[in-house]
Amino acid sequence: MNNAKSSEAWRRSQKFIPGGVNSPVRNFSKVGGNPLFIQRGQGAKIYDIDGNEYIDYVASWGPLILGHAHPHILQAIRGAMENGTSFGAPTELETELAEMIVNAVPSIEIVRLVNSGTEATMSAIRVARGYTARDKIIKIDGCYHGHVDYLLAKAGSGIATFGLSDSAGVPADFARNTLTVPFNDAEVVRQTIEANPDQIACVILEPIMGNMGIIPPQEGYLQGLREITAQHGVVLIFDEVITGFRVAYGGAQSLYGVTPDMTCLGKIIGGGMPVGAYGGKKEIMQQVAPEGEVYQAGTLSGNPLAVSAGIATLKTLAEPDVYDQLESTAQALAEGLFDATISNGIDAFHSRVGSMLMLYFTGAEVVDADGARTSDVDRFNRYFWGMLERGVYIAPSQFEAGFVSLVHSEADVEGTVRSANEALSRL
Ligand code: HOZ
Image 1 (cartoon, rainbow, N blue to C red):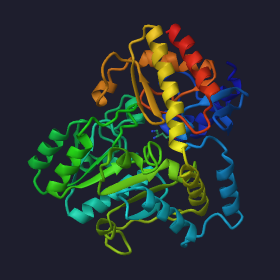
Image 2 (image 1 turned 60 degrees about the vertical axis):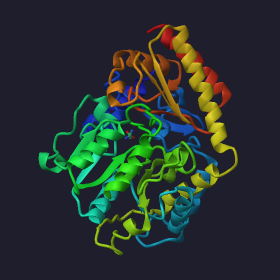
Image 3 (image 1 turned 180 degrees about the vertical axis):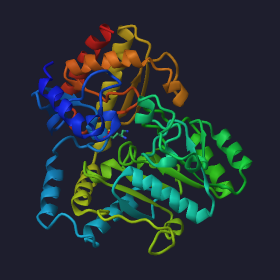
């Protein structure tokens, strides 16, 4: 694999950008090597500046469920751009996207658009705190909700990839009100709420963990959280930044039939443009300024280019059979990878929900973050390079999800499985 130009580009970028990247997990240091610099994407493929072609399962970390440079999205962005790039004033496009979200996501009656998933979770928690007049929150070990100060404790994604327990620069005082409990254990949430009577504002979690690999909720877990939080007047927040419009049009909450009080969105609803959203019950969202007293604002919130890309994405996802197609492609891929680990005698745990999938290099069953941490990351790193050298681009971290998009073909799946067989046979 020739990556001379990427190596040179990285040498240069490190002079001006921390680690040469604008988000830590993009850096390949944990898999050992330098990141590829991407020139363009088309459909299921990306092309680096050295001219190498890869089947892409990173999909910009989730948003590109339609693949790269989808004509509907490009057309929508071009159309919006002709009218100008930002106004800082309401547009009808924002209402159109908000209405689509409200109609799709069971818990959302009112929604506010922001610029990233981080902004969405931070704002939702502020609203939950304002609504309940309580300070403490419960977060789940291994869930990642963006780089909000008090949410970096025991977070997944880059925090897990780089083996950190949290981030420097967060005053202990800021994290004092964050209580952390394991995933898939509703009883410990009950105990924590009861040990802190009338003090817990919210429980926030990814209903399917997607930043510690993929960890689905066990039967009854989400229902249990719903009952416990309702009993104690605690706001239940689902962070569906990854799962929203990914595992089903209505997100994980529609898949599992559990309706939280608030939901955070991002990624897919911007079609590859920067976006986020938080919403929920009217009564709670009425706390948000200017209706209520919880302040939250943003110069570029509801940006017309991002909103247009989001509308085009959701319209395409609303077409018949889209989720069936995603399911059958992802299922074929997961089965192929499963067979490949068996025939190569590799200790592996496979996890998949819809078009999100993960191969953990562990013999343990992964039901929470501690299970994910049993993975042999050195083995994963060798697998990562084996796949990359064979033209398959997976995330450079054992803890980042793989995403199948609508444009992955049978040939892509077959090629990926062939590459996995070869890569695994050389571990
Ligand atoms: N937080 C993202 C992964 N879960 C990473 C975003 C990025 O590096 O682009």
